[in-house]
Amino acid sequence: MDEIKGKDRVILALEKDLGVQAGHTQKLLLQKEALDEQLVQVKEAERYHSSPKRELPAGVGDISELMGSPEQHLDERDVRRFQLKIAELNAVIRKLEDRNTLLADERNELLKRSRETESQLKPLVEKNKRMSKKNDDMLQCIQRMEEKIKNLSRENVELKEKLSAQPALKRHTSLNDLSSTREEQEIEFLRLQVKEQQHVIDDLTVVMFMTGIHIERLLRSKKQRRKSLKPPKRHVVETFFGFDEESVDSETSSVTSYNTDKTDRTPATPEEDLEDSTPKEEAELRFCQLTREYQALQRAYALLQEQVGGTLDAEREARTREQLQADLLRCQAKIEDLEKALIEKGQDSKWVEEKQLLIRTNQELREKIYRMEQEEHQLKNEMQDAKDQNELLEFRVLELEERERRSPAFNLHITTFPENNGSALQLFCHQEGIKDVNISELMKKLDILGDNGNLRNEEQVAIIQAGTVLSLCEKWLKQIEGTEAALTQKMLDLENEKDLFSKQKGYLEEELDYRKQALDQAYMKIQELEATLYNALQQDPGRRASESLTEAQREDLRAAVEKVRRQILRQSREFDSQILHERMELLQQAQQVI
Image 1 (spheres, rainbow, N blue to C red):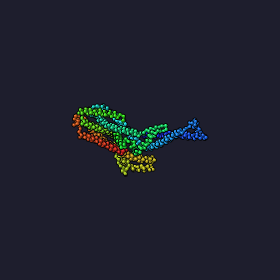
Image 2: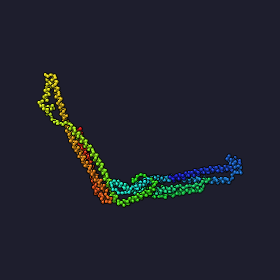
Image 3: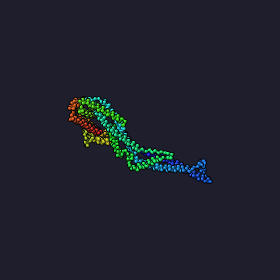
Image 4: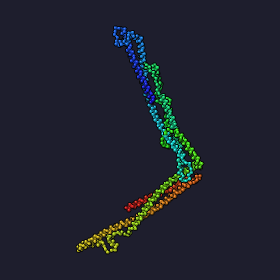
């Protein structure tokens, strides 16, 4: 773009020079016309001067008046001098016309070359834009990485303060003191994290350094190309008559040199035209190397983002690196001092590993105890529900017993009536000991007497009413028999329900006792595990390696805990299924009763 702008400025300067030269040419033409007119007037004056009879024209009279007297007329020398001057002016005009033609040709050639250069520079401009965009992306990535390094340095300072605030390691001989071992694990983890972050910071620093070197090389090559593409300045010397001989010769020589350069130069690629110092292969190698470094930088940034998270800043990279190195050295010295102190106290790396193993075992046992406590709590809730249900059943049984005690005893015996003697009133009379009365014959006799006309009206009415009462009594006795049968069936159902509730109460009591036994066994197992853990932790540190639990004992302990857990889960599932089955039976029985 700078080269194109420079060529535009050169073209404008040439156009300006052409305009100035055209003005001088016009001026010289006007002077030539004026001299021609004067020469014609002088010739006419001489011709009329040699023949006085003729009258002079108006113009000649004016010239004669200007000259003053006939003695002041121009002589032949003046005429020759004017002719020489006119010839000189004609030569200058021809020279200027040639100069104008050359400048026009040069302008056209420069325009053509400018268009060719623009077409050749177009891919380079696009490539430069892409490289500038990639460069901006890399600078932003470097800034983010430096911000990341800044955050890492701040975290490292916090870790250093945390490590300096940690108290000296000491032996733990009780179950409550083991809570501080988590802090030791955190210290180990933080130390490893600091080392990893330091390695990542070193890698990113090397990548940023290499990227900066390549960026400087690219900027330097761009500056060199811009310097090589600057157009040469043309010096034009202007005289009274236009351009002198030296300027014309210099311009013609520049044009010829340009033509010779143009003929000598063969058509080539834009890289060969503009990058004479850097060949095409070297540029491609640099571009490939920059691409690889950019990809490596992206991978390093992704790795750093996965490990820490956050953004980077590019302002304090060197100072933060030095500070991180100093902090890392101090942390390493502190860790070495702590390790020496541990070795002096007899706590070597093997004991530390065994202690970590015991810590993990303790954590697993705590988790198992917590799960057993949850199961115990669940069993307690189920046992409380069973107790509540048992109380409800006991209350129901007492209510049924009280109802049975208050209600009279039903000793009714339902007998079927024979078809020949199927009257309920007749059966009732037989039960009362009146066997000589036949209800059917009595009803027939009452009907006959009611139809007898010898009786009085009152007697007939009484007989009819007696028959009606007897029929109503028979219907009422039948209703009483149906009610008695229903009450008897209900009593039988209540007795069956009472027996069922009694059985269910027995089942629930047995289930409650069984769950109490399972809960007691779980308590005993938990106490045994706690005692085993406490005994393992209370052992002497010097004999801990020999007297600690072996792998077989640990496996047995894990198997026992797993067996207890599975047994409790199986029992709880069996109890749940049994309770669900019993409740379904109760629901079905209640639906049948309803």
